[in-house]
Length: 90
Image 1 (cartoon, rainbow, N blue to C red):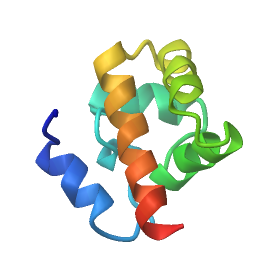
Image 2: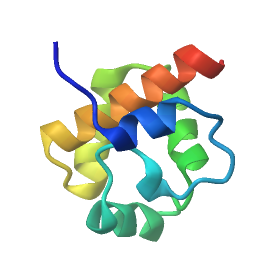
Image 3: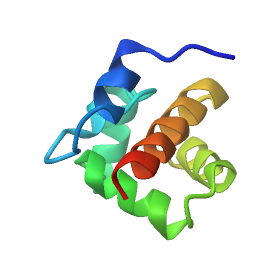
Image 4: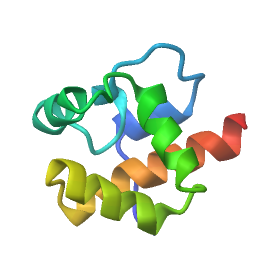
């Protein structure tokens, strides 16, 4: 089983509120800037995309890779983070 980063645990461990997109696991400054340029400036906006894709992690990772150029590890980390957040808070 893979371990999660502190960033992942911090995000999943509390309500999302108004966190910036770079608070998401797998999203750093570079990918965050690319998302912001497309209107995804907050974590909850990215969550909206995840929900529009019916919480399908495979579809979401494909979307994130296409939208930002994220690699599989980054996209997978973000998808897993959002999935676990949804499991805890929705």
